[in-house]
Length: 440
Image (cartoon, rainbow, N blue to C red; front, side, top):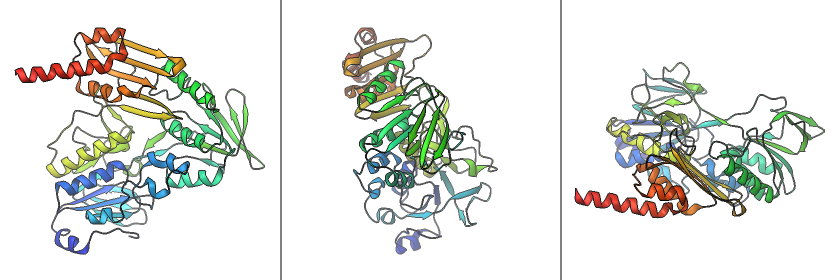
């Protein structure tokens, strides 16, 4: 293999032949977190991490900062200290997996090289998708999913460049922030009736749209791009509403899919992602999955879903590492579905069952003129979901109450009338639980 970052020779000679070999496919937050925890739990094991993009492990969440020039490409790296992985005895090699044999315990790479493993963690993440429309493969039509994509966008845009952004979901709004800061002439086209529809209800989505328009961004909802054409170097963007827009660059942020195609024929159980149990184990012996590629248990619903967010990836990585070492001795009852998004300076959040449950109750606080919104969802006297806009003081409390499922007692009735007193309710709940533990 080329471009291998190796552990110190003395470290390898002492341990690499006799001890367990943990192979990690992927180099994002789940993979890096798992590798570092494996090392903490077993100082003597071999750890190999396969990175597909030919650059050191990095975070996609840092790409917007690179786009606007706040950081250099190296600022996206997950570990910035030179020699970090070598010092930990973690081999980072570059290549792409093409197939997996779970019987022989081998991973074959593009080009034919083969890697053996004792325990395998699949943390291959996801890939940006594109809608099947005419012209989608034209020059100057980009995704914004990799460092290479970010380089292309930087090279192709300047202040005043006409940019059309397809998609105003979570990823689209992260890119929107960076593009706005690059001072391009930006138009956003979203097929849903509101922005960030998977984490906002109508009032929140409308406020985010109004906020963006107030920043000089054109936002077109309830329509979609139907075709793209090149007219003497100008991209003609046609929409379902009958509009035709001129653009210098089009950026596609219309969705992602889990990177599981290379596992065809492996026998591993897959759905929207790789199905894992509460220990992050797949259906194949000694094979685990974590991060965007893993379809794990949702804490709120009990269903198995892909949660493509970095906090979940990090949590998955830690849990997978513990079970790879300890033999599935540390199950977890699921991860909470959560999103925190900054859209041109306006912070929105959603936690758990933010859309509510059948037979539940809802409390709402709204000040559209100040772009403030809070929505609480209850089942009996337990907070099961929440969403907020422009009110960051409640973020930790909302997550904590939903994750613990703590009963609110009389405070539930108070919150139905005054939801912005949620911090007081949290403190009262914590004191009540403390008193109950002390009495026991």
